[in-house]
Structure formats: C-alpha cells, structure tokens
Image (tube, rainbow, N blue to C red):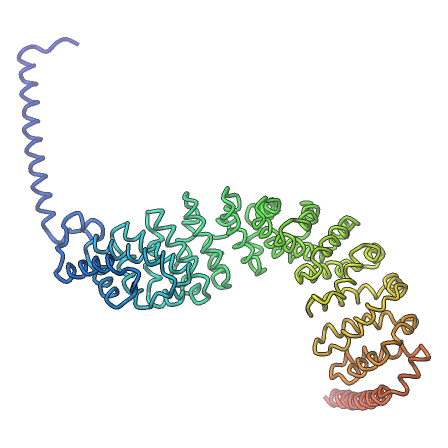
Length: 578
C-alpha cells in the first residue's frame, strides 16, 4: 500500500484530533451524570453498597456506649461478662449502623463464647439478630462462630435459639458467598438439629435445599458441617421424606466416594437412617443400578472403623428385603462380614454381627453355611459373652439356621457351647437370656440336640432352666426356659436329674397351670404329662397341689367346651333360619 499524500495526511490528523476532543467532552458529561445519579436517594442501594456511599455519623448515645464498653473490657471483662450494663452496651453496639461498633459487639460475644462456663442468659440472644444480618463480613463470621461455640459448649438452650427467631438469619447465612460463614452457619444448624422440635422448624423454614447445595461445596469444612446437619435431620421421619423429595439420595450416595472420611461417615450414617424406613428402599436402590450397594460393600473394608461400622449398619437396614439379600450374596459379601466379626473395633464387631443376623434370614445363606462361619461366630461370642448386642444377634443367627440339615453341624460347633455358657453368665440381662433360651428351645426340638444335652447331665444348666422358668415376671424368658425343659423331658430321660429340684419344678408348674394365658397352661400340662412317665415324679405330683390345680383346669376346660358347643349350635340355627 502506498504512502498518504500531504493533503490526506493532514485531513487524517484533523479527524483524530476531533475524535479526541469529542471523547473528552463525553467523559466529562458521563461523570456529571453519575454524580447527579449518586445524589438521588431513589437509586441508593441497600446492604453492603450503602457503606461505600457514606460513613454513618456516630450518635451521642453510641459514642457513650462505645466508651463505656471499652472501659468495661479494660477493667472487668471476667468479673461480670453478662451483667445488665454489658447487655445495654451490646444492644446499642449491635443495632448500630456503624460497622466498627458492630465489630466490637461481635468480638465481645466471640470472647465470651471461648471463656464462659455458664449458661448465656436468654436476653443476650437479642443482639445476635442484627449481628448475624450485618452487612459486614467479619461481623457475620465472628457472630456466627461465637453462636456455634455457645451451642457446642452447652451454654445455650437449643430450642430457645429457634424460639427467639434466630433460625431465619442463620439459614440466610447458608447462602453467603464466604466459606467461613457457610461453615459456621452449617455447624449451627447441625447442632440445633439435635433437638426434635428444631428439626421440624428447620424443615418448615426451608433449610433443606441450602444444606444440600452446600453438601456439594468444594470446601471440605463446609461439606462436613452441611452433611453433618443433614445427618441430624434424618432422625425425623418427616424430614427424611422431604430430603428424598428434594434429591438428597444421589448427593449422599456420591459423597460416599469422598476422600474425606468424616464426609463418608456422615453420608453413610444419613443413608442408614433413611434406609431404616423400607418405603425409601426402592428409590435408594434405583440410583445407578444398585450403585449404593456396591459403594457400601466397598466401604465395609474402610480402614476408618466408624465408616466400616456405618456401612454395615446401612446395609443391614437395606437387607430387610429378600431381594437385597440375594444381591448381597451375589456380591460375595459373606467372607467380608465374617472377617469383620473379629475386628479390633467393638462398633465394627457389633455392626457386622447385626448384618450377619439379618443375612441369616436368606434361604441362600445355607449355600455358604460352613464350619468357618460358626468358628468366627464362636470366637466373637467368647470375647463378647455378656455384650447384649452380640449375644442377642448371635442367638438369632443360630436360630435362623436351625433347619434339620444343620443341627448336627451347629451342636458340634463351639457356638453351641457358647450359647450354654452365655445362658449361665450372671452378667447377661433379661433380654439377652430370653433370646438365648429361645434359640436353645428351637435346637432342642431336634433329637440330636436333645441327646447331646441329656448326655451332658449338666446340673448347673438344668438348675438355671428351672430358675428361669419360675421368673414369671419375665414372661417370655420363663416360657422359653420351660419349653427347653419340656423338650428335654421326652422319653423321661431328664426326670432323674430334675429330682433334686422337684420342689422348684412343682412351683413353676403350679404357676403355669394357674396362669391366665392359655399357652402357659398348655405348657404346664404337657410338661406334667412327660415328667409323670417317671414313677417318682408321678407320685410327687399326685400328692402335691398340682393335682387339685389340674382338676380345676379340667373343669374350666369342660365348661369352656360346653359354652363353645352352645355358641356354635346357636350360630348354626341362626344360619338355617336365614
């Protein structure tokens, strides 16, 4: 391209100078316009921008309160931190439009929250409203942190915080852009949600969605507290339903993959609580074609024991259906469950035996029944003989396996010995003893188990059964112990060993015959018939009040049969007339 001639170059320079002069005037006009707009009150923004346009002038009462507050902090902060003068000053500072004064109030609350060891008076909650809603970020951070401290240390009544109206500003802070404020507000909700009434209030106030949003935060502290708050909210059936509707299940399931073990734990425990209601199982299992089951099975192997424990408990709740049990067996879960029975963590051992007990209801478990399973179970029972969770679930597991084809394997295992020893253990309470007696009663339905117990001639065991049979204040334990005695009384082989206990036997049989419940009467009669095959027992019964009581039962039975015949006859005649 050629060079411009002298005339064209001058014209181009004149045009550039014109544009510069025009641009300068436009900029000046723009500045004048903006200045006039700023002066008009209609366009003054609210919130944080207001502070950029003017600095509020301190009122006289604010200056006085600030000075008194400073003097108080210098002279006697620890002497009367919650006195009336302090409250009056905090009220003025907190409700001030001046950020520095609010900052002083928030700082004082933070100091109190770190040093107080008494309850914060209810009236001191009022200044929190303007502090939590302050436009100053540092004030929000300090006031929300001090509130968390008060709640965690038990210096504040959780229900009172909601009653005075602080829930709304706390929920508003969940939508802050600052991670520290988000973290503190989530921690507040997590602590408040320990209370049942507060959980309902949080759900009604719309706190679920913001928490689910923050559960996906990139800040692990925010995530932890958000999921922790969700965990406490899942203690409410109504809130669980809301969480499921709002899409919590996919969020919590994905969080199981988190690198943070606390987040894994909170998510797993939340899902476990939701799974406690079978109505939610279909939605939970629909996520990624049983993806949740695969994740939970994987977390059972976690090196973090509380995560492993919660994974077992969540699976246990889901495994209440046969379909889930079948899926878990297909995933070859049983070797892992048996391995966890011998964990160094008591929580993991208890969670794994709970899951094993639930899985033992599955017909497919028979395919994996083996000596190894019974060995692991026996080892656990040896170390936890008086632990009610272990004893009850171990007894139920063995009872679920009491099919005829398994009886010989069970009786020959150490598990059978542990059942008998646990029944004799004085440290076991009524509920544990009831399940033990019920399991032994089911085993003694079978000849092999009965023969084994009769051959033992275990006087301590028989004495224990007779004693428990007389515990009619504990009906189920009494009935199950008497059931074992009845089963062992077949063929009269146990009668000779009961003779030293004849008086106690007669006493519990008398109680059974006079019991208002029919099943106890029938148990008493059946046991009497079997024991009467022994001549000595027969003689003793004929000379005891038992004979008279039997006669009364017979008469009552005949009267009942007569009445039943009349009732049936009357009903038949009415039917014919119709």
